[in-house]
Length: 168
Image 1: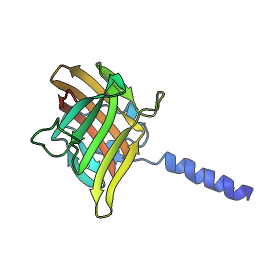
Image 2 (image 1 turned 60 degrees about the vertical axis):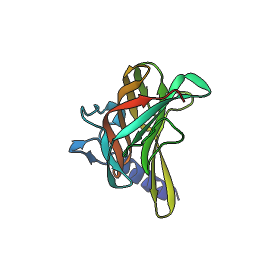
Image 3 (image 1 turned 90 degrees about the horizontal axis):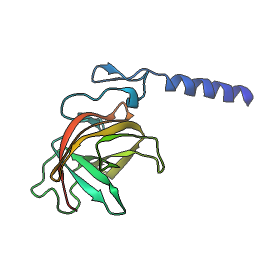
């Protein structure tokens, strides 16, 4: 039994150190928090399918006026600030209403993002604890920043965004 446990732990440690390449960049040896943001429109894979940011919103969080909820979509909406506008494939997280960076997997409560997509079985939510979001500029009408998050080799996003800031 003890020998099996040692073998299992060795395999688990080896798996954690496996190399992984995302967009030609080896990120398997470093956490996404240490990876630089790409200076181009946010894109990657979600559900194993190519994903590129098209539109999104930043809305105040009801129970915390110092935070905003951001949603990045791969499609546009006629009235983005009305209702629950998230697409068939979306990236969602919460962050400070002030410029700065939020690291996933830290804080109390722990910060995270969600990759959401729909398939034949329904909606899939993947909770992302490896990554970060940076708000570079915020006005009454827009929020500009960058996002980097990785769930696994088939689910990751990196790049910049410009969101419509909604009143709620």
